[in-house]
Image (tube, rainbow, N blue to C red; front, top):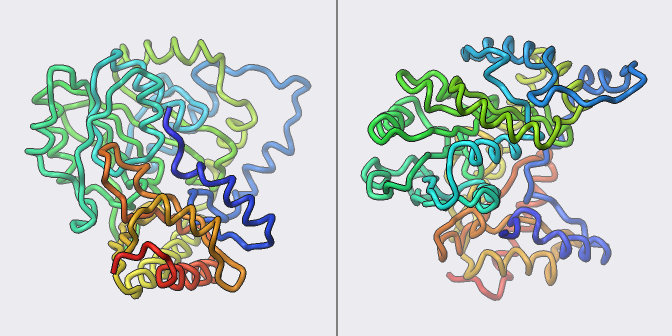
Length: 389
């Protein structure tokens, strides 16, 4: 099981804090946006005498409310086509375990969310990466690259849209290319859409649930963690119109008994969060994105594409080794008694040697803290012993 590039440097951050150094956490997608009060009040107002197991597929009233939510984003689904998971993490694991046998393969464009590697290892599945490039802003690799990667053992393609770690937003046209491959080779298409609400510059998210002709091939993964800034609720969902997939996934859901009761109660209440909340959040994240992208591109030898979605960027820096640099920032460096915690991009690639001079940055801090973080990073690149130009 691989270490998480997002969390493996935590001991070094803890030691830096113990030395009195302020650490700006840009390594993890933990927003500082307030969780909607309506969701927290639902937990505070819980009146039952017993906190009981829920249905293995999730509380029915919550799944019914989810039908309303998905209808509002142009996705038609029924309560029976959903299984609530302990976060999107469990939903992804259920999808892999249900659709892919041990030793079979799944194609994922890289860089990709690091924990996909861990989920695949857990399920005995081989990840076959297809590399995208920072020079193209991490656009979908050409169809020819997918075709070269497909073997008799290939059973699925996994996408994250908008993408973690790159912030890339796949267009409808790109997704239609993937659909054609899915039809041609009879594959499953697993789509992680947990950042659906976070798109910028008037770009719109397009869900794989609306691709024509592959209803039985599509599995949608979703979560409330980022939508409502409620990562600790640990509530996600697996959605598919394929009854065999859902029947199989239910066996795994029953084996873990049920998803968290309080998380579901809060997530159900959160569906009534007013649009004004999301409008305010989106404006704030756009400001943060613009600060990070603008400041990095001002650094000599650095480059950062401008993402259309999520709240991450992958930046290329003039450094010899991202893992060494990220550890050095915490272990040996501070600027005005401050430092930054980044995620080395090597952990988001399956191909060894890629991402050596790249880092993932989560722009989840307020603008003032982000500017302070960029001040530290600007000077750190100058001072780093392994600077490459």
